[in-house]
Image (cartoon, rainbow, N blue to C red; front, side, top):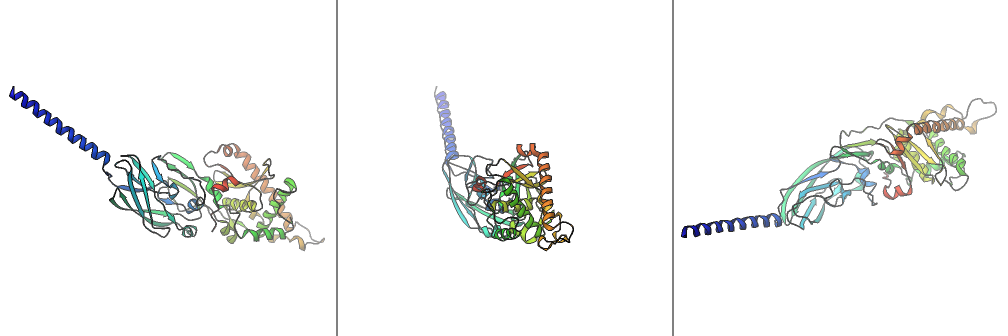
Length: 396
């Protein structure tokens, strides 16, 4: 009997010890500051696009959205720290060291859930001038230190590629399968506020094709078409030429981009490809209060514009045809007299303008179904007031 009691007592001790160990383990697991470490991550494969940062810096728009719902902070930072929380309401402190493109910053967060993986977006204090003036892809080291519940997790370093201001993010792939279209960033290159626009408009008025730019206020669609032709005419007289430069040095199966000249670059170089010409012309149209539309098809872009304020009528332009005619081959209209034969500069300009409209309309009709459905690689982007509230011009 004594032996049986001792055995029972021994088992009770063993059970008590086991319960204490299990309980203590659960307490430690639930309430300790457990975290194996952290990593620096992002949604764009280690690429930073200045145009994507600058265009939404002063708006509430979130174009690049984190795929994981368990995140805290400001996703506009684009750079995140991934770690696993320990106890509930863990306190995290993240320090980002200074670089050429951003200042040193310290951010603090509370992670509500225990034992949960979080993506934390710390504050990034961007150097907007440095981003705006970056004309070639450049590496930058992102140095991050993390502390959780007073325990230092050390420091991590990751090298990112800061892309050129001329690279527009077309889209990116998440989880190796889902494509996110970010073509709205093309609106950032439409810059109706650029100070050089006044000079171009003054030159257009000097042609006497129109004596003012009232937009939709007077004259109906015919008056709108005449204003648009005046802009076309002055760009031809500026001797714009087609330049097919559009590729970037970016080599990635995660992000896709297109090279776009800014308004100032295009004017100074007098060179445009289909995208450059479209955003340049859209900038001028916006400046005279005519609503433009950027039309994108596979490998091409052209511009449209509404011919009335109610958006019942629309015309399209193939801007690459601006350089099809050299105005120097024809006489200026003011130098013509009755003894001369042949077409004048303005006559030839008007012919190419009408041909451009015909060509662009045909391209639109051929691709209308894909354009209107928003199929990947196609776009109908109206540069409206609503878009402007979300995407601002990047300038330069």
